[in-house]
Length: 603
Picture 1 (tube, one colour):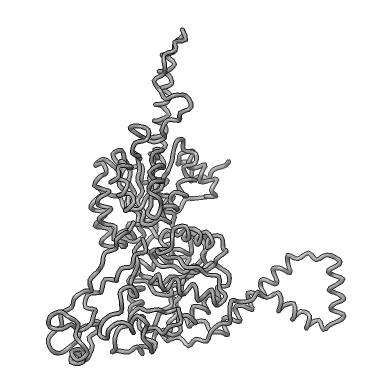
Picture 2 (picture 1 turned 60 degrees about the vertical axis):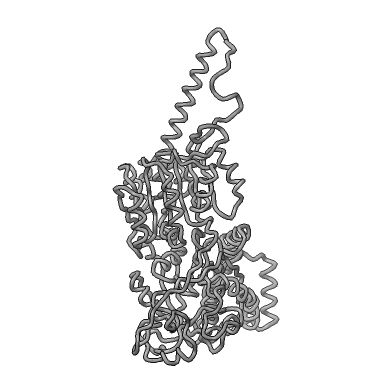
């Protein structure tokens, strides 16, 4: 096997694995990591989603595991030599000091067989899916490294089965923060021999509230170690975490912010709230049978939207934290194979999804900030392929989305919502292209040619071809829907009125802001917010928790901190300030944030 020239500096087992995998060259972040790891410094890797960071981690740790494997081989050879010297020329039957015949020695550094696992490297990730992805990538990369093993520990799986796997003495453990801390507390994992720790997707872990767990894990690691941090974005919280546990870190910028998305076309459609589903249907009809990943803000919307799409003839499935792990695995497998081309997911559930050839990411609900947009969009346009990131923006959200895009330096093409006429023309063009491809590849037999000739002599050729085109054209899921859309450059948004509350959007009930109240709002007393379960965001485990209210947003409050009733609110009415919730005139109102209930399980 002829290896690419760029692989010659890599260890032979690693370069051979890359060549088998079809790698012809390394990505910029991978080349930078290989060059920097030799310096022995902590690495702070900043690179966008889809730039090959997982393989870069494996390349950084490869030399360590090869040295460790070589050391174990030397130790085994020394033990074998000492055993031979005990036997001697006289054929002494003195038992050898090594392990009994047929018993494989532990592959990892262990104090005793069956005790706690003592890996030499630890990789901490935010979700189960990302942990499985890391294990898969490192599995083929380290396939030729002797006695190298990787185990995964995550929430949602049997901790007893994980303990049995840890007793086999893995060299590297990949896990989520909560489950790693569980094993440390149970004594099934000992980090005394850890020489390298990697925090992958650090920004996502902090967004999910894992800072306390990370601090507890890092406190149990040896002082003499290498600490590497990988993150697509580096907000202030991530920089503070990196400064706390890294020493003299070397920053590696594999790609500038936005550069990894140069193969992605960013499109935005401004729509009215009652046109959300119609606009989505037309966008999906334009996409055809290609893989599309849809993002919504709430897990309830993931289920209701997927159900409505299925009822309309699309093949779709939801993915959210409330689903059992077995169902999540089956759903991802169907999406990866193409059996289910449409996946409706929340931000939390989609973390760690690594599915090739996703043609479009559709933001049914726009993300909270530019960092979340980068993570979402990075699911398409991977490994040099082209992709599209499509935003559906409600009129009241236009200003916020524009600020978000500017802060992330993301250039978006604002386009009208696809009309039914445009969708029908695109479907016809796609059908014609597919027909020409089938005609070019067809090799009809002589019998078929005779039948065709007879048919054309008996009937009008134009009518025959038209009928065949009708039967050959693939049936669309449904007819496109009429949409009007909104001009994003005309500021006709209302200046007054209550801010919209999240509510059911895809289950046939009227949504807030569309002329009706939700069932939850109808059941709630007037002047009070709807129940938290209808406003909830989700944690990794799927537990509902109310969103943290932005500063200054809320209802007018009474003099003692309670909600102002209808009469008090009427007195407070007046010209609204640019910040929602603040009122001009009179005494300033005290602004408080809504109480936040912590999730019970984030493993």
